[in-house]
Length: 528
Image 1: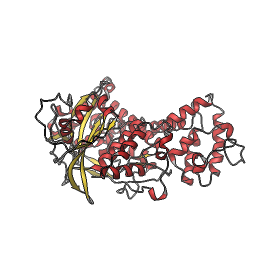
Image 2: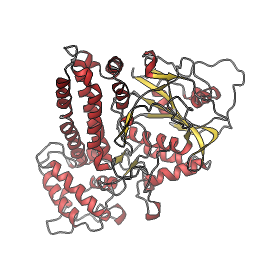
Image 3: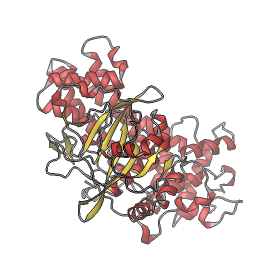
Image 4: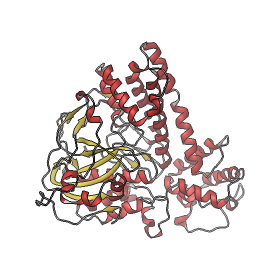
């Protein structure tokens, strides 16, 4: 059975009366044991005619689940929310958040329900959540439903990020509901089963802080420490664990954003309610990977001011961490002036942590094994050249892997020599005027001369840091359009390609190609 299965069975109805099957999920729930003010308990809203669209078999096995059981009639009813799985304790989590800089004191899960947690094969606790499971007390007049296109988009992009090695929530399944939901136009409905290390957000801390519920803050922080940062519980003084927790969340977030920057990923809606304290990418809405590089790139249709542009993501993440620290002030010290000083000391480390992670990531992308002064400037010089020439981000770095320093000509030469390459495979072909690239290649060649790495080893390490395949927007949109029309073939193939982003796939080179002018996607949508 392939990792991603696309069943062709007919619509699935009620159970046929066979003997009860073993439980689909083996829940071991702890968030549901927290005080009742942390959430609202309710069951998912049943759907009309659930049909399994795609199932992530590999993830199911990783979670200790049976893919065949998940794909069965009973399993699909549970993935759709029509039947509550044994052991589940469905709840909508409460949280607040800054949305585009504006604080909203109550948000919460308006269309998602946490079913519970399972322990995966590695012994890690993982949340199982249904997204599009119906209205909740936090829906704010919304219908609580999800459309098929955005559900599949999250499935595609989250799985692409996982294959790239970037911390992320995962997608277990998408089920079509057989219902039509109204957005700008009528759309087919769906339910996404999302898997996460946690659904606690920066906004969850803000929810209790704005209510001056210090005890709630403490319970939440203790839960996060016990689940994600047990090292904080080993700190000395009674107050100290919360400083250790803050430091740890800041460090994970800094590394995560550096990971995003290294692959040209733009989240699109970095509100504090969309920032996980577990350091995972979460809430894939108007997200996208860049084609042509420019730090001001924005795709989100609702980000008119460019607040969440690619180049702004590090600063926004820092700002979000400041909001987390602000919410945690009562836990950091009883003296407000001391707690502010402690918080600012923790926040002051973000820039260094991010820059170190960014330097490491781009040093790997450039094939540099040993840090040297000037490496950051070398990377920035290439990015500046790429932005000026609108060079493709992913292909520039991938094709750089095959350039050998000895092929780079003298300062006044037009560029790499001795190895003629077809235009479509040439690094220089990506630049309308490659003069700045030629100059940069000279500097890069001199820097590589200081390395002891064998050329074959350098090429191998660079290829492990520079993917050939990303979830390009035009490919994603084409596969979604086909799936909505009933053709799952393009979606199946795209997912297969994205599972091996660092491998050469000669028969699928079209998935590595940038969009033609008429294929360029300039805006993405959140789907709510």
